[in-house]
Image (tube, rainbow, N blue to C red; front, side):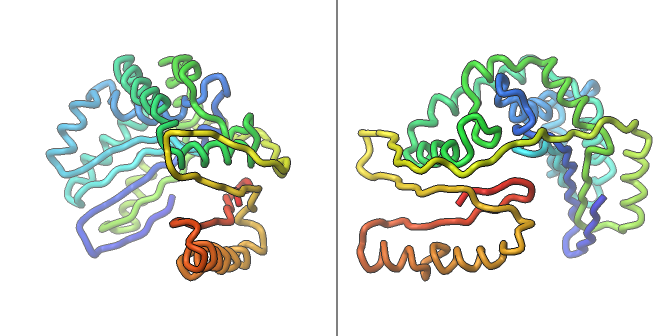
Length: 289
């Protein structure tokens, strides 16, 4: 539990993170964590469907949202201080008693498939997607892309099984910030979560990272008049003792308008409008340079 009192405004924000994200889903069902995050909230609970929950939250200028990401899934809520008890109770109901509905899963699938259909419209998106595959390897969980077949393969039973696997108290972090008394908030959170039975903690299988094989690769798109050029390799992890030195190095090299990349390629030579770079560092796996 992480608590941060902030009494400037009468608002309380909270997030519940559960370990387990797209890197942990089966390759044949790529997109599962995202579909789960979308369908979870829109489906609602046994006592209140998602549309009813929308109306209730809108009347209070509050929100409850769910989402899926690479390493975790999350529930987020926000409300005025005076509405905390009601909104938090609804959040816990969504967290512990979801009812995944077929019509909402179908809607989430259509939205994801529309994104797949459009993803080659943007040249920048193509170059970034393919560069990630080159840096990590096309079969690496961090480079996988949902496809029509993998999205279609996800079922309601998959969503329920994912929920049962990840939403257990020893697999969750709870963070709350805003206008509250810390001791009272801690008591409310413990009352909500301590009765829950412990489960098996989600552990990510070992993922291998190797430097990409040197080469030049093209993704041709002849209906645009500009090119995107990326030079990529593996970055590092946040635990690297050189992380801060590398961050400073990147600012000098390509981090902003005063960097060497911008000053030379854009300002002096006029060869490109946009020049930039990053030395990626993730918390438990290499980022991308």
